[in-house]
Image (cartoon, rainbow, N blue to C red; front, top):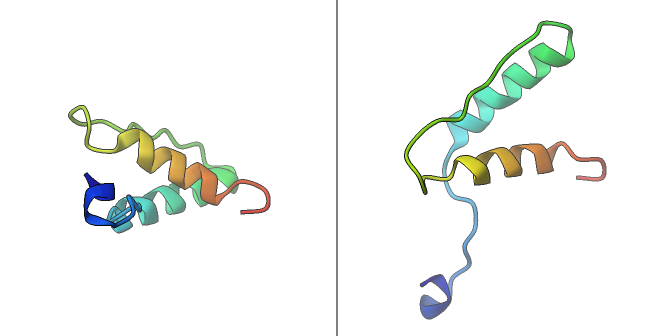
Length: 61
């Protein structure tokens, strides 16, 4: 549908979730173990959120 209207399918929103993931990542990196569960209904963007988060931390990102 995005192509129909001439707009991209960029990653929109999830700022608070990304901040939380970043904080937990930093805590884990400093030696405090953390467990994160991405849960919710099918199609709400759980996988996209995690992929974007991990991609932002990939070497060269």
